[in-house]
Image 1 (tube, rainbow, N blue to C red):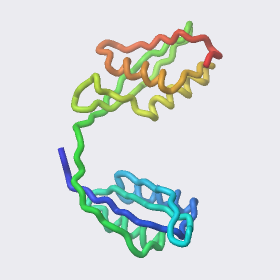
Image 2: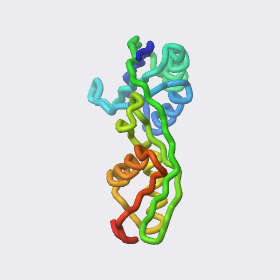
Image 3: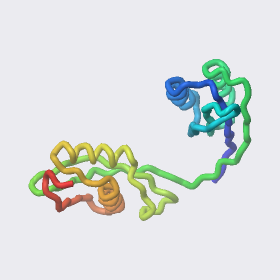
Length: 171
């Protein structure tokens, strides 16, 4: 599938980190789909930044307002693009995680690409939330291992259950 898109590209050597952090939020609030801020070295060896904002064509004016009004950037590039993408849907499941005699009930979610359940990726915020719950009971499972367990639970057709063979206090 595809739809029209725009990449807004600006360079700046007069902005501080605090303002850039606030600008990141402003861009997203104004409809940006993705924002990248890259550190660079500019003319006269000044530290600078390259701002790359991916947005729908309907949000160009809002992004330009942030450039001029908030960041005092006087010029930028606009690159009209075609955004190509695949069908993605989010699935959610209730899962039981067992560690010895302790059981945790939680909701997990993941993105499925092209309706291929074996092409599922657990959402990072979901993995981090489960990781935190496990830490609270003394289990510190590496992120990649936890993600593997959550992925298996998401593709499980029955009620998924994860059994972790670790002792509390193990890392």
